[in-house]
Image (cartoon, rainbow, N blue to C red; front, side):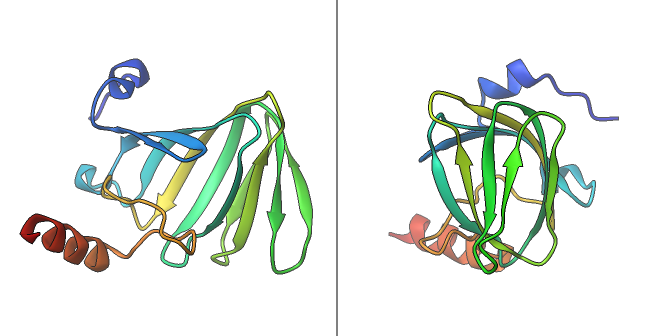
Length: 141
């Protein structure tokens, strides 16, 4: 059984701060669950263009308001407490938090994240093999 406390995880290496968002990775690949689980906060007024080419993601809004846009279709959907969206087609999307409002979400990724991922210039996370190669190159430099 795995038991973790969000407040404890926020103070450790499971917390990742990035441009426009903060994510606490509650479950990762090493936990061997077949998915990863995160509590992610989108900062007020953030506009995040993302494209998970190598992962699918399901997001449930706990608090806050904003919108999600499917870039391919231009379709926009409100994001508010109780709304779930799933990026089942590796959808290029823009997530927007309303001005002055942070969005708190619960997110599931498959394949699971290792915890080292960062968004590339195209908004995607690297594959695990690409991430390992980048880690090795960084250590060698």
